[in-house]
Length: 212
Image 1 (cartoon, rainbow, N blue to C red):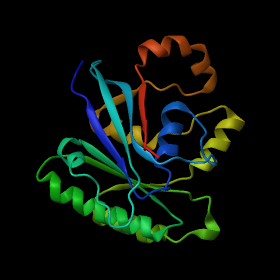
Image 2 (cartoon, rainbow, N blue to C red; image 1 turned 180 degrees about the horizontal axis):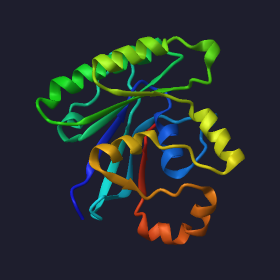
Image 3 (cartoon, rainbow, N blue to C red; image 1 turned 120 degrees about the vertical axis):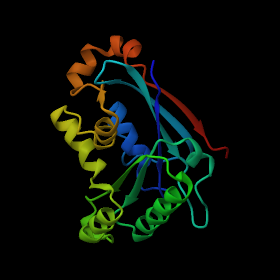
């Protein structure tokens, strides 16, 4: 198996990091459920390069950042890429990813890495605080890819159509790393191949919860 890719997913608390990963990787609809504080969840997806070499894509779902709390430095030392998540109904969460981008630039030195920005919760139109044009201009100035989305809408669409929504995160890293995702495109395909996927997809999850 070839060298894997480690991607750190980060942002303020309650912007939807875990919901995004659960929907993208497993089709789990956790939007609207009572959330618990994430300590660190690691999602491991088996992917295949265009040369047929199997590799692992590790996505680190980090603990939601609070005011005055920085992202632990060890993430910068091993990460091959970052997914910066904010909520469009929270200007504070957007300002935080601006700071995170500066931190990444500071610690990565000359190391090449892909950085993706996701603006979640666009369904909350009456609560929107982050202007789309402003966010896109910032992303362009930083040479970043930015998508606005709503995983509340994605979950509802998945229930109605039995179709999983496009995977923006993995699509970006697939383009950069020339990966081909092995995640199925429909619920029917997943059901038919579920037993085989348990062995072949090698998608595992380690969950740790914060001590109360």
